[in-house]
Structure formats: C-alpha cells, structure tokens
Amino acid sequence: MGSAASAASDAAPPPPSPAQPHGALPPYGAGLAGILPQKPDGDDKKEEKVDYLNLPCPVPYEEIQREALMSLKPELFEGLRFDFTKMLTQKFALSHSVLMGSLEVPSQSADVIKVPTSQYEFGANFLDPKLMLIGRLMTDGRLNARVKCDLTENLALKINAQLTSEPHYSQGMFNFDYKGTDYRAQFQIGNNAFYGANYIQSVTPNLSMGTEIFWLGQQRKSGIGFNSRYNTDKMVGTLQVASTGIVALSYVQKVSEKVSLATDFMYNHMSRDVTSSVGYDYILRQCRLRGKVDSNGVVAAYLEERLNMGVNFLLSAEIDHPKKNYKFGFGMTVGE
Image (cartoon, rainbow, N blue to C red; front, side, top):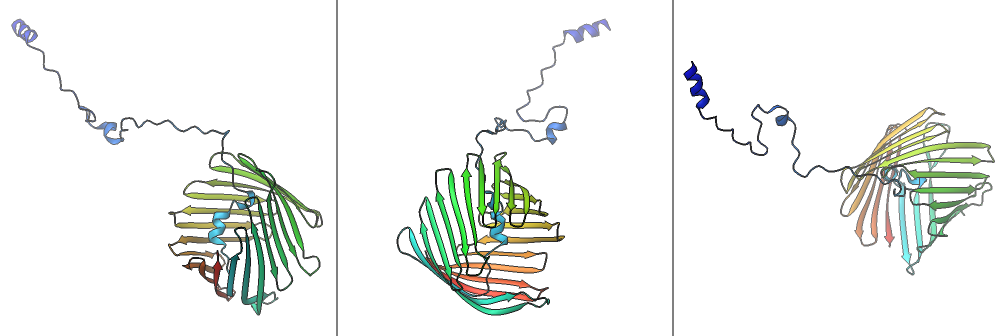
C-alpha cells in the first residue's frame, strides 16, 4: 500500500479545467443564471433625477380636460350651417355664419318639442401676438365680445361679455391670468357680485395639482374645488372634486399620433346623477372623425372633411333613443 500511495503522490496533477467562455452556463447547471435575463455590458443606467426647481408650467386650470373634451364634446349642430371667413389684412378678418335648424322648447311632457329657427351671425376678428379682439353680433340682438391682452410677459387680461336686450341676461367676466415658471394663477370678477380664484402647481414633471374658490354674492353661495392632472406622451388622466357635489374623472389614451380614445365619469351628489361616456378621435389625411356614446344611450358623431385649401365639409349626428330625439346636420366652412 505504501508503494501505491507513493506512486499516487508522484503522479502528475490533473490538468486544469478549461476557462468558461463569457456568457456560458456554469458547470453546476443553469440555476438562476439560466432563468434570469442577463444585463448586457454597459446597460447599467442611473435613474434620472428630477429637478424640482425646474418643473414645466402646467396647463390652465380651466383646460385640464381639454384632450377629453376634444373627443367627447364636439361642436354638434342640427340643420344647415355655413361659415365664411375673409382675411382683409394679416391681422383683421370678417366672418359670416348662417344656421338654419330646430330649437328645442322646454315642456313638462316627456316628448321633445322643436320649432324651426334660423340665425345669422356677423363677426369681426383682430389677431395680434399681444392683443386679440373677437366680436359676434346675432340677428336676435345678442352681442358677444372677447378680449385677450398680454399686459406683460407673464400677466394677461381676458374679458368675456354677452349683451342682450332682455333684462338681467347680460353677462360680463374679467380674468387676470398670471403664468409662472411652474404654476398658474387666475383671479376672476364678474357681474352678480361674482368673485373667483384658482391656482395650479406642477408637483412633478407629469403631475400637477390645483384648487379653486368662488363667491356668488347675489345668491349668497360659495364653493371650493380641487383637481389633479397626470399626463405622459401616451395618456392624460384628470380628477376634479368640488364642494357643490361634483366628482369628475377623465382619461385619454393616445393609441398613435392619429388615434386617441377617451372616457369620462361624472357623479353629482346633489341630484344623485351618474353619467359616463366613451369617445374616439381619429385624424386621417383629409378628414377628422370624432364620436362618443354615453350611459344615457346617446350616440354622437362629428366629421370634418377637407375638400380643398380653406374649404371644409361638416357632418353632425346625434341619436338619443330613450328620448326619441334625433339630430342631423351638415355644413361647410370657407376661409382661412
């Protein structure tokens, strides 16, 4: 046995095992290395730090649902509509609008009562980078006016007015908008002793939150509301809560650059009403199609077809099966 042990000790050591190539399985089997994906070389990226002192400016408070409203609230009409706009100079333009359709008359019965009506509207527009003047005069004597003036780079004045021959129906509103680096503030003064203010702040690069208050002195009513908006390159979600009992949510998903899907939900605590709707916005090469369907059984669609440079054809339809109310319209817009 001693010679056997001596012979074993004098034998050459076994050759070393060949080195494992990069990425090969270990000799003891796949294990976790074969289950978990391996990171490629140089793929260890540090998370981007958020600079909270350089956040983007949020959208105005009253426009947090603008993407959803674009799909769910198209400008539906009934009958015939024709709009013509003529540019006289680079900043001044005149417009003419004709609408012939039906007007719903309120009634105590469940039946919808409509009377034929027609309306002509004359408008004048003055557009300047720092001043915008828009006026509309209707045949029934109503006058609508809008003014937007940039007092400074961050402060703007907006005036909305509607004058009528009927007493107590004229309205006026003054808005002072201030735009900061990452926030917006607005103060409102209107007739009937109306005062309001709102503020919206960017919390992160994608999230903004705001609040509003108002006081209606003639009716001795006040209210407060809160909202939030979260947006990315592919989606926009909003939430609104008010002391008047309104809870509203909206969500917009951008399927592609030309297709968007939208939905909203609204709950009124005072009246116990709940409504929800789903809509779409499809932009084609020569037309744009928008439509929606809501929980009340109302289906609507709006089509804008571009026939030529400055000439668009319009189709509008709304069907309310429960109330047996059907609205169809077509029109044309001509001008820049």
